[in-house]
Image (cartoon, rainbow, N blue to C red):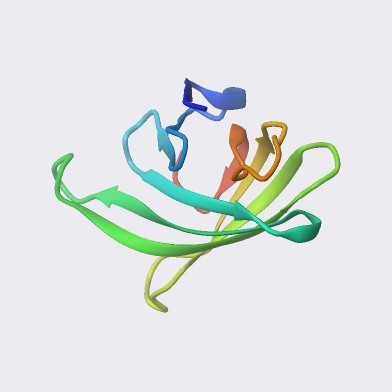
Length: 121
């Protein structure tokens, strides 16, 4: 499954999923999230990722590694907390998302970003 969505749920972000990696970017270009997610039993979500923010130019940014944790609700929505690995890194980022229906044992697929906390608009 490969798809792209622009301006998810009026959050001003674009979402791309290439069958393995979720890429979420804001319209202003001030941050870029990349996530690899896995679903465990009972709807628990775990994963790894990174957030990149630019310094002065579009291609010389600062990247922080993240650990993802969360849960999928029975209605297909969920909350994912992204915690930086480095203690001095940025704050926890919280994503409210909608997941695509799961087929067999596939990885969880974020189909919509409903809200974001911890990153600039």
